[in-house]
Length: 220
Ligand SMILES: *Cc1c(COP(=O)(O)O)cnc(C)c1O
Image 1 (spheres, rainbow, N blue to C red):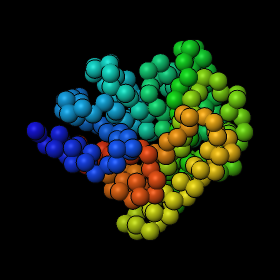
Image 2: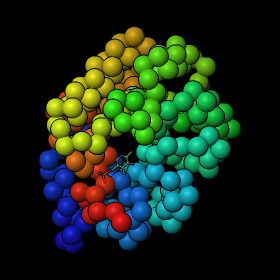
Image 3: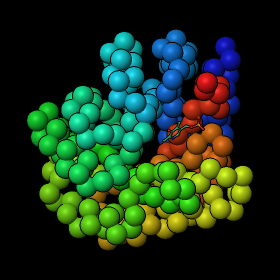
Image 4: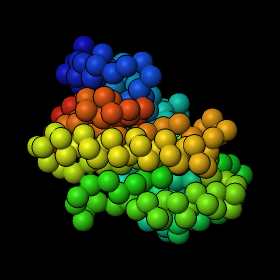
């Protein structure tokens, strides 16, 4: 087993069976992805549309590609036909465009609504009012499959800050689920946790972790 495969398995053994691992392969070459793939990993996440398209074209077709980065409205059309999950829906305008492209492709595009939980201004995400506004209008998005919420914690060493933010996302998920998606079995994911904080995220109820550098090594 090579280095990437050892690290992938080390991460996997630490995850409860109910938690989905999204291997974040951004900036990493196709060879690195194929090493993880050879070990059984089929879900990969990218944060740039161009890179995502190139990798989708070059690599095996049973890979499930997730978009985890900020997505510009004018780029939705390039990924709408094949994307397995868009984690980063951070505006109603983006959701409208995803719905429009989904209609053109005759598919329901799976998405997570990204919620702003951090203390950093630089992070993207919906606030609670925007989230509620979208949820009040889900019937308008017939070509979107709502699968849950996503959040990124503040980039800090302070574990209690991170824990609080993850906890707030978990509580918000339960509230939104009960109020707007009680009988929708697709709405079940809480995407939270990266290399530095996925243990904490799982303790706080994450169902999907997005792990990059702990598998593929540091990015330059
Ligand atoms: C890069 C990235 C990750 C993975 O970060 P690591 O610290 O390398 O695990 C997770 N989520 C998002 C949205 C990212 O952009």
